[in-house]
Image 1 (cartoon, one colour):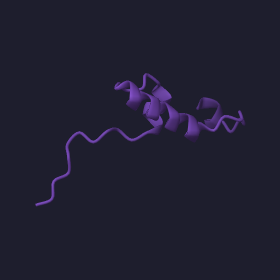
Image 2 (spheres, helix red, strand yellow):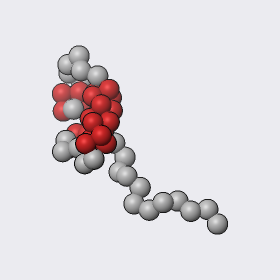
Image 3 (cartoon, rainbow, N blue to C red):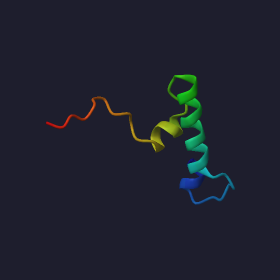
Image 4 (cartoon, rainbow, N blue to C red):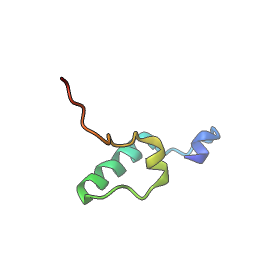
Length: 52
């Protein structure tokens, strides 16, 4: 993430890696410990949306 932000090409697809981490965390039933994943994904909704 830092290298990508500095414009250094790593060959790692950060979006795919983040999506995979989110998918794995969901299947494990716990949040990802990765600070990068937490920084690149929106926080879960704290309250459900109700329409009245």
